[in-house]
Structures are given as structure tokens and as C-alpha cells.
Length: 240
Image (cartoon, rainbow, N blue to C red; front, top):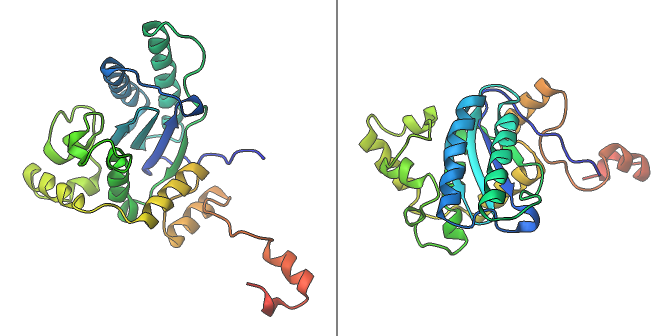
């Protein structure tokens, strides 16, 4: 079955994940994480991507960004991946592929899901049992977004800026969002949308995107299409 085409819309935030090949490690030491972040900053600027949040796990990467153009994210990830693989192969005397393949992604409805995706991304190390609090993990954007540490890589989204009238207030409000873990249902919703290349949005926003693109962007209902069932049963009132 062919893979679903990505939904890449200029100006609409995008949550994406890039995994290591066969879920193998893609970072082997502190220098690797630092090099990746340096290249992320360079390639994001070069290709018109505003990075809002990130988390570099041992064998995969999460990013939340807003692309300037429809091809901004794809071009950024291609250049970033190539440069990082060349660096890793040279530094660790290895050869061959490093990444699983295409990155997976989902456009994110601003008002409902953007800050939820911030939490999902930066809470990854906590869910994985690596740390007790996101501030303990060095390779995510939490310390920048919640404490103001080294924000050079990040460009805040308008909804982040709206958390407070000044930097101190924004940091305090942002930390408050992390007092509780994400509900399991939200975690699953984000995972399904990202892995399936579906839009993460309410039905009305989904309908607007589908009208613009001329194709389905949300999850389909399981089972046979309604018309096929109606023809089989001969009674539309019995279908569900």
C-alpha cells in the first residue's frame, strides 16, 4: 500500500518525527546532539522554517515548526539529514543509512493543539522514563521555553507569546502547563496523526483543509465504505 502524501501547508505548524533506521540509535554522544542542533538552526533559517520546540531522543527526533512555504520542511529535513549522516559516518567510522526513511508529520491546528504538541514533544524523556522532569533533559527545548535558556534556535509561535505580557510571565505560564502529564487519549491522538500523516485538528478545521487540498486529511472510519454496506444490506437505516 502506498504511503499517504504529507500534508504541508505554508504558515500552518507542523509536528514531525524522524526515526533512526530500524529504531537504532542516531545519537552516540554529546557532540552529536550539539552538531545536530547547530545544523537544525542553520537549515531552518536557510529553508524558511520557524522552530518552536524540539526533542532529540536516542533513536528519534521530534520537531514542532512552522514552514514558510509548502516545501520548506521537506527541504530543511533533506539538507539536515544529509549533513548529519555525513558527520556521523565520518566521526564514528561507519557507513550506510542512519535514518528510517521519510519523516512522518502532521499539520497542527494552532488554537487547540499547538501548546499540546509543545508538551507532547518536551515530555518525551519523562514518558520514556529517562528523567522525572523535562527540565532535567538537556536535549529538548524545555529549558529554553520554560526557563529562557539559550533561545537562539527557537522562534516562538504567537500562541506562546500570548501566554504572558513579558518573558517572566510567559515562562511561568509555560511551566504551569507541565504540572500534569498529558492525558493518554491526547498522546494517542498525536501519535496516530503523526505516524499516519493526518492533520491534528477538529472536524471543522479538517474540512477546511480538505476543501483546500481536495483530498482527505483525517483518519477514515474503519470498515467498508457506507455505500457498499447500504447496497449489501438493502437497508440504509441499519448501517452504522
